[in-house]
Length: 137
Image: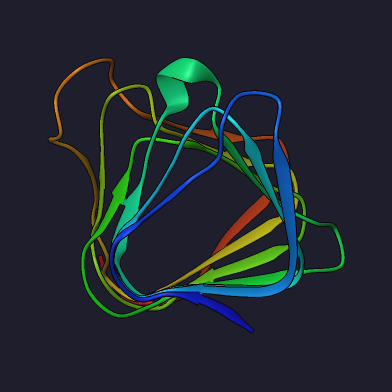
Protein backbone atom coordinates (compact mmCIF):
# COMPACT_ATOMS: atom_id res chain seq x y z
CA UNK A 1 0.00 0.00 0.00
CA UNK A 2 1.25 3.48 -0.88
CA UNK A 3 0.90 5.91 2.02
CA UNK A 4 1.00 9.70 2.17
CA UNK A 5 1.70 10.42 5.85
CA UNK A 6 3.20 13.91 5.53
CA UNK A 7 4.78 16.23 3.00
CA UNK A 8 3.55 16.80 -0.54
CA UNK A 9 3.01 14.54 -3.53
CA UNK A 10 2.75 16.58 -6.75
CA UNK A 11 1.52 15.21 -10.07
CA UNK A 12 2.36 17.52 -12.99
CA UNK A 13 -0.03 18.24 -15.86
CA UNK A 14 -0.71 15.27 -18.16
CA UNK A 15 0.78 12.80 -15.67
CA UNK A 16 -1.01 9.77 -14.22
CA UNK A 17 -0.15 7.70 -11.16
CA UNK A 18 -2.00 4.47 -10.42
CA UNK A 19 -2.08 2.67 -7.07
CA UNK A 20 -3.68 -0.62 -6.10
CA UNK A 21 -4.06 0.82 -2.58
CA UNK A 22 -3.50 4.37 -1.37
CA UNK A 23 -3.78 5.74 2.15
CA UNK A 24 -3.56 9.43 3.10
CA UNK A 25 -3.12 10.26 6.77
CA UNK A 26 -1.88 13.85 6.39
CA UNK A 27 0.13 15.88 3.91
CA UNK A 28 -0.99 17.14 0.51
CA UNK A 29 -1.80 15.52 -2.81
CA UNK A 30 -1.59 18.26 -5.44
CA UNK A 31 -0.89 18.99 -9.09
CA UNK A 32 -2.91 18.93 -12.28
CA UNK A 33 -2.30 15.21 -12.89
CA UNK A 34 -4.57 12.23 -12.26
CA UNK A 35 -4.34 9.64 -9.49
CA UNK A 36 -6.12 6.34 -10.13
CA UNK A 37 -6.97 4.05 -7.21
CA UNK A 38 -7.69 0.51 -8.36
CA UNK A 39 -8.64 -1.38 -5.15
CA UNK A 40 -8.73 0.76 -1.99
CA UNK A 41 -8.35 4.37 -0.85
CA UNK A 42 -8.28 5.35 2.83
CA UNK A 43 -8.50 9.05 3.66
CA UNK A 44 -7.75 9.77 7.32
CA UNK A 45 -6.86 13.44 6.85
CA UNK A 46 -4.77 15.90 4.91
CA UNK A 47 -5.31 17.91 1.75
CA UNK A 48 -6.49 16.94 -1.72
CA UNK A 49 -5.70 20.01 -3.83
CA UNK A 50 -5.55 21.56 -7.31
CA UNK A 51 -9.11 21.29 -8.67
CA UNK A 52 -8.56 24.66 -10.32
CA UNK A 53 -5.95 23.10 -12.61
CA UNK A 54 -7.89 19.89 -13.24
CA UNK A 55 -6.30 17.65 -10.59
CA UNK A 56 -8.33 14.42 -10.25
CA UNK A 57 -8.45 11.48 -7.86
CA UNK A 58 -10.31 8.57 -9.53
CA UNK A 59 -11.75 5.76 -7.42
CA UNK A 60 -12.27 2.79 -9.77
CA UNK A 61 -15.63 1.00 -10.07
CA UNK A 62 -14.34 -2.09 -8.24
CA UNK A 63 -12.59 -0.04 -5.53
CA UNK A 64 -13.59 0.92 -2.01
CA UNK A 65 -12.85 4.26 -0.40
CA UNK A 66 -13.06 4.86 3.34
CA UNK A 67 -13.16 8.38 4.78
CA UNK A 68 -12.32 8.15 8.46
CA UNK A 69 -10.16 9.86 11.07
CA UNK A 70 -9.88 13.62 11.35
CA UNK A 71 -10.46 16.68 9.19
CA UNK A 72 -10.10 16.29 5.43
CA UNK A 73 -9.59 19.29 3.12
CA UNK A 74 -11.11 18.85 -0.34
CA UNK A 75 -9.81 21.20 -3.03
CA UNK A 76 -9.46 18.53 -5.73
CA UNK A 77 -11.87 16.69 -8.03
CA UNK A 78 -12.66 13.30 -6.52
CA UNK A 79 -14.41 10.96 -8.93
CA UNK A 80 -16.02 8.07 -7.05
CA UNK A 81 -17.04 5.21 -9.31
CA UNK A 82 -16.83 2.57 -6.57
CA UNK A 83 -18.10 2.26 -3.01
CA UNK A 84 -17.22 5.15 -0.70
CA UNK A 85 -17.96 4.98 3.03
CA UNK A 86 -17.66 8.06 5.25
CA UNK A 87 -17.37 7.00 8.90
CA UNK A 88 -15.68 9.90 10.72
CA UNK A 89 -14.20 13.38 10.43
CA UNK A 90 -15.26 16.62 8.79
CA UNK A 91 -14.84 17.30 5.07
CA UNK A 92 -13.94 20.94 4.47
CA UNK A 93 -14.13 22.19 0.91
CA UNK A 94 -13.29 25.21 -1.21
CA UNK A 95 -11.19 26.29 -4.22
CA UNK A 96 -13.48 24.35 -6.54
CA UNK A 97 -13.19 20.99 -4.79
CA UNK A 98 -15.76 18.48 -6.06
CA UNK A 99 -16.83 15.10 -4.81
CA UNK A 100 -18.47 13.53 -7.88
CA UNK A 101 -20.30 10.35 -6.88
CA UNK A 102 -21.16 7.94 -9.68
CA UNK A 103 -20.99 4.88 -7.46
CA UNK A 104 -22.24 4.33 -3.93
CA UNK A 105 -21.65 6.84 -1.12
CA UNK A 106 -22.61 5.70 2.39
CA UNK A 107 -22.67 8.21 5.26
CA UNK A 108 -22.28 6.51 8.65
CA UNK A 109 -22.94 9.05 11.37
CA UNK A 110 -23.70 12.70 12.05
CA UNK A 111 -20.90 14.15 9.92
CA UNK A 112 -20.16 17.58 8.44
CA UNK A 113 -19.42 18.55 4.82
CA UNK A 114 -18.73 22.30 4.82
CA UNK A 115 -17.52 25.05 2.51
CA UNK A 116 -15.01 27.01 4.59
CA UNK A 117 -11.71 26.96 2.68
CA UNK A 118 -12.42 29.98 0.46
CA UNK A 119 -12.28 30.37 -3.29
CA UNK A 120 -14.84 28.75 -5.57
CA UNK A 121 -17.54 26.95 -3.61
CA UNK A 122 -16.99 23.19 -3.43
CA UNK A 123 -19.68 20.75 -4.56
CA UNK A 124 -21.05 17.28 -3.97
CA UNK A 125 -22.47 16.04 -7.30
CA UNK A 126 -24.46 12.81 -7.11
CA UNK A 127 -25.14 10.64 -10.14
CA UNK A 128 -25.09 7.38 -8.18
CA UNK A 129 -26.53 6.27 -4.85
CA UNK A 130 -26.21 8.10 -1.53
CA UNK A 131 -27.32 6.37 1.64
CA UNK A 132 -27.10 7.21 5.30
CA UNK A 133 -26.87 3.94 7.14
CA UNK A 134 -26.45 5.47 10.62
CA UNK A 135 -26.80 8.78 12.45
CA UNK A 136 -29.65 10.79 13.92
CA UNK A 137 -29.68 14.21 12.22
